[in-house]
Image 1: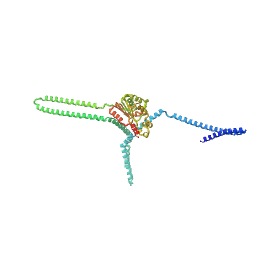
Image 2: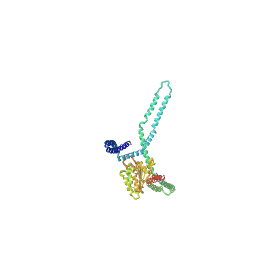
Image 3: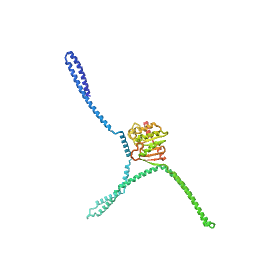
Image 4: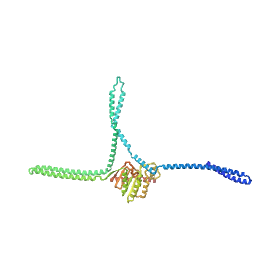
Length: 476
């Protein structure tokens, strides 16, 4: 501000000196005296010199500022060049996601608590406690002993202490690590047995129905057995009558003839009983074979197998494909978008649809998502990094409004259903990751119609949280 005032003053003075020079020139011509013209000219040149020096100083300052700005720009450019590339950032995101999944899925603390509890329940710990109590008791007895009038013989006490020490040394403390290992193996076997028990109880209703059928067959068999026993009783009564008849006819029929007739009747009776029993056993075996389950159950191990089944379902479905996974990320865009290409091909089939259940519950509970003024979909894309493929799926929803549906569930489930032919349930987030990770995953493939119908019913009956948010926004 001061510089501007000085500059305006110098400009004004310069203009005044020029005017004075003109007036001095007129006065010099009129009065024939040169001093009237020389003095204003000298003043004007002095002011012009001062202005030129000030302008030169300002130019030097501007040049210095421009040089500093250029250096800052070069420094920023070098920093930008040193930033990691987009590919490196993507790889870093994948690594972070995998680490998050490892942290979510770990159960190390639970196993450690079980091992600690098993260790604390060891019999050796209790025996050590009892030995400590015995030593403390001996120490208290030594303190309470009165001062002896005669020299004290500590041999008995030393012998007792040596015995306790020997018992303490004999404790198998060195094998605790081995016991802990055995306990851990037992815990792992228990987990496997629990998983196997869980798999076996899935068909409980079918097994109960089969059991009822078997019970009905058993009741029928018991009834037939009762009838057979009654026939045997009748045959026994016949034998008794034959004995009576033998007694009455001994005088008319010889003993050899009677024994032959009796043997023939017994043989015929045994043949009839045996034939009846064999027929009933064959019927039971046939019915037991018919009620045995004809469905398959296969383990799906690691990400490459579950990814292969996902692509197979996207290729083979002819009616309806249901995919449920909390996050929509790299799994959809993996390998140059091969899954999206199969979606396009699948939607080109007549009367074929795709339903995707998505959205993690804790992401929806995020404060920035809950209190955002935008829609839940837009908020999840903005504030959460695991929904990068949502815009591409929304484009499919616009292109195929009757065939492609996105359903916001708030879920952590991972399963797919291909038509009503087969289904897969597992731990792999198949829509948010590819198949290159070495992280262990496990799932189950089955063509059991009971499980397939249950999964379809669970998906269809789930509420669409996206529609609820829309209704709330309209109501407010």
